[in-house]
Image (cartoon, rainbow, N blue to C red; front, side, top):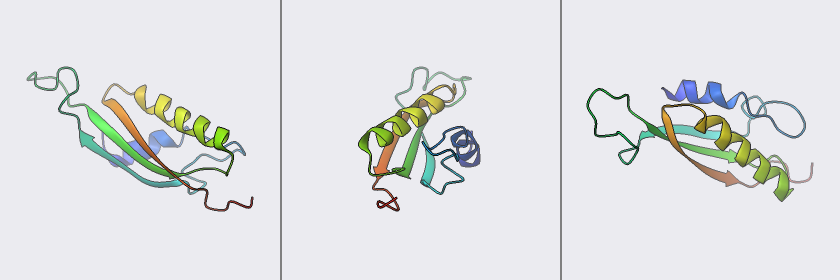
Length: 98
């Protein structure tokens, strides 16, 4: 699992208006760090598990849309076996008047 793979996974998450969050420019950063507390982390031969750190802009000032987007991102990433946790930092909307 690389950070490029992580961005590729985020292309499956969409804004309420249609484009994916990567194409819409909402993803500010997407990084991975090893998760030393993941089940089996200290067992030799098991693949490493990671914490995904995602910073993104809210799609609008609508709090419900921001919450749904965060849940969508978390659900998508937790479906990947090598990701054990997701930490999302949600920034204010880029264009709050839209």
